[in-house]
Image (spheres, rainbow, N blue to C red):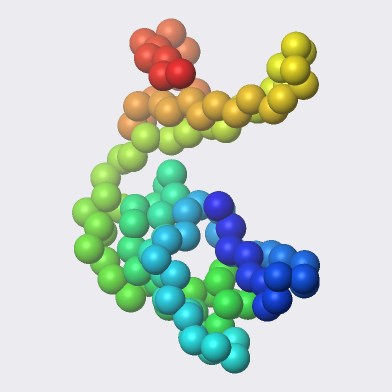
Length: 114
């Protein structure tokens, strides 16, 4: 999920490039000022980040370390997959989660959630 802004409903959306992951609870000021947000990804636990303005998302710095314990542990790794359904031509997406320390190992147990 990325951050988009729009000044007026008649204007185009502006994509603000940042890290791949999830941005939540975004707090910003007017006039392109500082921005704070909660960020997490499949590789990074949830923390609060601060950037001088929305155009500097990639240089945001963490201002909390409440979940630092997860950075010290071996976490599951993931692979993203997507394919096109031949019947309706819709894109289907999937995420394969590997157990910690088993990335791309073979003959692992599989649990499927649909």
